[in-house]
Amino acid sequence: MRPILSDVIANERLRARLGDELLAGKLSHAYILSGEGGFGKHTLALHLAAALVCEHQKDAHKALPCLECPTCRKILAGNSPDVIYVNRGDKATLGIDPIRELRQDVYIPPNDLSVKVYIIEDAHLMTPQAQNAFLLTLEEPPPYVLFLLLCENPSLMLETIRSRAPVMRLEPVPNELILQYICKKVPEARRMLEDDRGALEELVVAADGSIGRALELLDPKLYKPLSERREIARAFARLCASPKNTGDAMRLLNSLGSRRDELIEQFGTILLCLRDLLLCKQTENAPLCFFSDREEASSLAYTFTTPALLSLCDSVSDATDRLRANANVRLTVTALAQDCNLL
Ligand SMILES: [Zn+2]
Image (tube, rainbow, N blue to C red; front, side, top):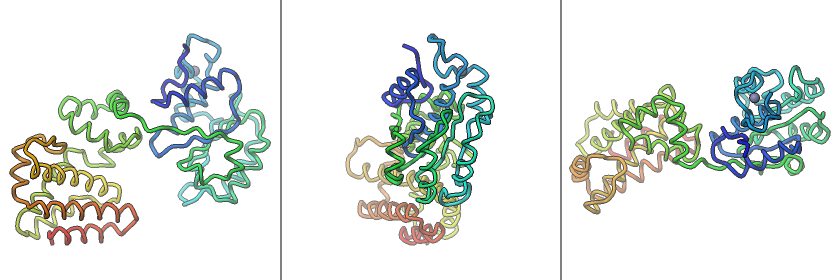
């Protein structure tokens, strides 16, 4: 069978449905591509756009899109003037202005392709006013137009939009496919696979079904390498076990990170470390997921009582919840340090 949209990972049913509609020439003129951040909405949108105009579209022996012809390459590189992004810029919502621009632009025929594809990012953040304006275009679009609304929560879209744009729901990507993908694309992931497979697997679990998230976690510009986060987590546990030393505590607190998402990641690693210590206290042969050296885990666990470990886990979980609920970053770290008797 001809591979269609095969570079989009997982999501077989969704790809099969879009593939059938594509080959039968029965694509809708609008789709809502729904899924959490990093689930592959952008990739699917670009590959669908390329599949529509791929120069090998009639060649049943080639994958569709072929990803090799000049048209496919231009689209995937983001260089086609007929694939147009609509987004909210630095605003919190997608307001009426970009939609007004779209409504004017839509009647200008395509430049060099047979279609014009509008990729509307964060469509769930469209204001009701913008959605109503968009609806007018969606009701009677020019024949060459395809709207792809990327959306994390379709229930925030007006029913009238949802009834005209089928919702295509992207599923979380299974862990083994994330692992394969990042090892194919990122040299650092291949290095970890050789040197520290456990850490790479932990990163995949933390990505929670999202390829985009896995790639972010591997990006040293965004996050500290996992090995460093693990070292900080160990230091945190050791410091909680030992008598107060304000200098060490301050150094540790500064090393935790300053960005909200970075701290949430770091707290997650600390929790894994603390849970291993708790397990060590309960049974001798419990499977550990943070420590590879059981001796190290046991001797560190020995310095805590079980209630003390439980209370540390609670404090770190609470701090994570507060960060997720948008609490002030610095105050949250200070409160955590006090909860854990570090300061
Ligand atoms: Zn092509």
